[in-house]
Amino acid sequence: DNYSVIVESPSASISISPSPISFGSVSRNTTVNTTFTVTNNGNIALTGLALSAGTNSYNLTLLNSSGSTLDVGDSVTIGLRASFPVSTDSGKVNLGTLSATSAQASASALITANVDSKLSINVLVVSVGSNTDSGIQGQPDGYVIDPAAGPEDEIEFIFEIENLFTDIEDVDI
Image (cartoon, rainbow, N blue to C red; front, side, top):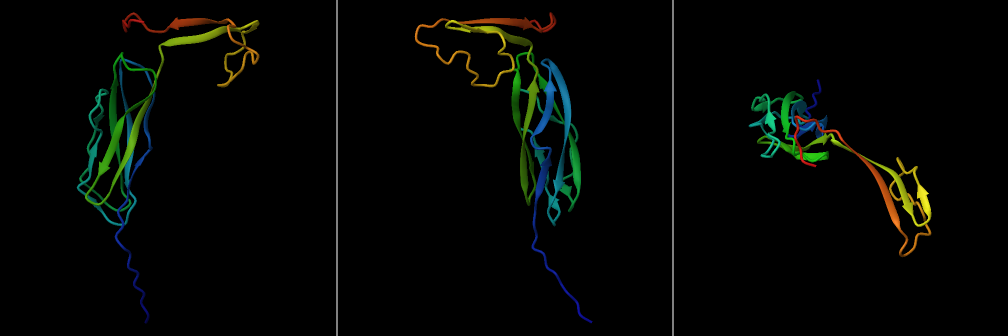
């Protein structure tokens, strides 16, 4: 009888998904939850596993803790909570970094959210020199209204700004 022995070198690997961890589209003055998964992709157990969301102004909180060991091929799903004060800037916001660290390996993932804007700004008309264009909504960056615009040409913008805040939010604009 012949026997084969295959010896694998120990390999530690940990992943966080999704990466980045996103709360998606959120409103100001709310607290929202999301989940992420930590997976042991290596061929040895991960011991001393610890998760950290760092310190920040969004009160990032891990909702359930994982055990300190993650066996080969195992995954754990963790909840994450964030609070978005009224003063949060709109647009894509980086909330911090989530770190998963064990005695054998570590990984990190950016935590993001897309904070809804409460001001709607629309450009209705743009005039450059003698040319006027009211069809610039949706045009790509670099769109040219008047390629022959020259020194001392007058430029005029007409905007429509709509306040979408509620009385409850009491924000100065």
